[in-house]
Length: 619
Image 1 (tube, one colour):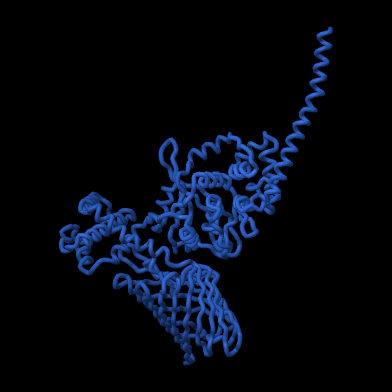
Image 2: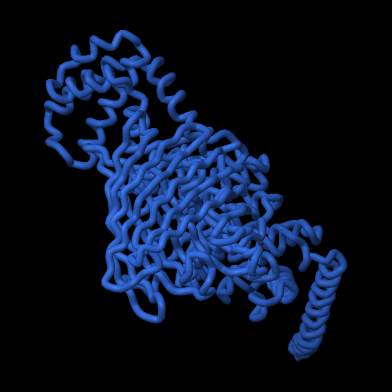
């Protein structure tokens, strides 16, 4: 009886002690949480650049608004609210905290460092597996060159290459940011990509598959630039990649594209890689700015077979060309005996090997034993030492050209359009026909949201001469093996008058196809185009056909372009014939001087001559 009374008393005492102890523990945790939040506020952590980088908060706006990316319900609008919610989630209730710290490891580790807290070990099996699989030893930016087959690839593409090792050996992954296109693609997709947004995601893939897709299937050159990151910086970046997994991000071709999306990730590892705040940041522009800012290492160039064939064939002498043609006909290496210079002979051999591999890869010819035997003979004749020298010399030209111009431009100039005119041209992206395109074998122009303003001195009036929503032209030299199509797409608003007399803009759309041929080591291009255009001109709709013939003559410092365009239409247009001759001088460091003279003639016999000179800065 006495024992039962003692047990009963102890039970009552324990019951009374337990809530009190729980309350005391709860108060202790609450006090600790308050002290952490006060410490964070005292250190102004919500305004810390790195905290805002982790939240993809740049220029006073969030690039990510998916609620799954935030702990707080107000996180997508307030860095302060997200900081308080993260501190409470990470360091409050331990049973809840572990799930949050495994979901947001980069934020957790950074807050532990800032608040002087020893971090706990991650116990999430999925996170542990991810970290083993993505053990980063080196991280590189990878730029793939422009593709004019797809509108979204006209500025190239940027992604990250993550090199690491796991139990099965070396592994390389590719992290890219891209739009998720609907299956029933239409004009509305193009409109949304330019003026609204599409759903976008960060996607982790096999790097080997990306090389096969871009370099072989799409024949786009790839440029790898290793990032100069410490082990700690690489770890933070990898933790952050986990945080953006399966997160929806608004993609916009102008303001938030593959380049800016990847730049936000790079800045987690390299916070000093500051966003320039430009309206449009292009993939190539980001790579160039990272290299010039000292954040990137030596460029590794991975050329396509098409590029190699164009590059080597453009350096052959007439004797080399004849010898190569004879081999293609007879499949006999003795045809190259007439080439006495060892370096030249090796260049021809490398060209012939590239052509055979290209034929095999593209199934343009039978890939039987005979072709394999030819490849074996050519490989046996190629000297590795000389081959390395030849390819290094040729590819160094690309590396040199890759760092020429920026992808935005500002032009100022003077012109005569019936009266003296001062002009200003702004092109946020990407490339101009008057620019130095020696990096490419083609001539091309791609302008997006570009504007040309004129100030008429006599009238003392400023007028918008042209606004290009998109202006794309490419002149690709046609080669028998690798082909090459020249094309044009343009959507713009233009002045109705040639001399600003009407001050009225009209919409104008043009599509066209053509053929370009190259002579004299690709320094002289001549072309023919057939365009179909539609314009709402003079208050009525006007459709026309516009054939054009022209040429480019260029060297390292100068480019001359001339063309004749004819407008065939059932209605009166502002001109019937247009003849233009322009000359550009490349002064180096992204500076051009251009001069042009244009002759217009309409179907009433009225002739107009305009002349202009401009100075362009690429940045």
